[in-house]
Image (tube, rainbow, N blue to C red):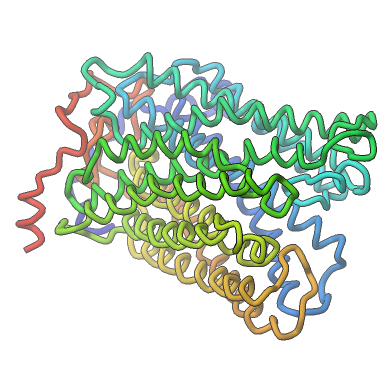
Length: 545
């Protein structure tokens, strides 16, 4: 790795969470939050590549304006599988369930989460939900889209809708248990002296995300349960011919699913805050403002679900209110981008792999956020809502934002998690390849959307072909970029050099313990800082010169 990790290697390894029993049974019955984080990480990685394979096949089909690989029904099943898997089995759990599970007790100076058995149960419930989705794929898949919109999902689809609904329904309980565990841990297990405004911003972000998980996920569970009851028993809940209201389904679904955007993005913001301040060697600019912005995003996220329904037949006055609130919720996000930029200003910046990923996150999230303003505009959304503009915007936020930040955090804390170093040149190359491949994949889709290409279609007008070929070429580069970390991180875990306890010279309680940490996290009570991110700005300025 780079000179940032050139301190002497640690002494011979002592007992740690990785060496505390090697059998599979010891892992499957563990209540150690660190091992549970690893279990989550392995599981969501598998789902990531399954969902990514579906996307790759879709992009191959879209090279041609006419069918070349599959039928319309197969294409519909592929984009449904891609959406369901990537949203509920990767994006939502990726940072909270893996990095959050591993780091929150370490960052608050605790030995474990507050409810360790519930933590293990949450992984089993998550895996059970995933099994239902795998069964769904084996049995023929679903063709409704990941939103399960009625009436198609209740009356017309002949695919395995019930299996998919059960899988997502069951997985929701895992999210609730994880969120509840983090809330209790942050409230009850903080080390003495670790006040709220000494907490890392990553803890603030996971805490706010947990509030959303606990409050919003039950609404999704109720919605999917009602949908299943209508499909199985013929109830008229969302069926207009039986006195129901299909728009009610959209209200209930998006009441969860828009806050779910912040379930994916808020943890990413927390990761970016940790990485940027470390590699700029400066305290976070406006720490309290950043913390308040996180809370504001979580609160306002519950008030804007209706901007997904501007063309669904809701009241014009409701649409105007939701449009206004959608602009309001952009303000705390803009504050965070400004504060990250101010943190970088005159910092002693180094460009290790975590920093490259974090900067990529900021740039892509900024593009996604700015294009979201167009979709928050009632007049423009009517024209753009059914086009590829929405696909591009969604992926700039979700993939460009959340996935880039996940990789930033994974590379940043990898030496702490595994006690091993990875290839710095390989990791920098992967960050650049992913950034280039992502933009080549999704930026042309903004142009396709403005020109009017409908989303969800697998046939299109020939004059859209060039941009689709460009997008598919970018997808192949992006896929290669995603495979690279799998290769060098696997090599690192098996054969990497031993990592020192704090290779980046970072602040935070998690860096005061060994790498990898002992079973109970700390050999001695950690030293509580007087303020978070206590980097010396004068030293950073001197280094910059």
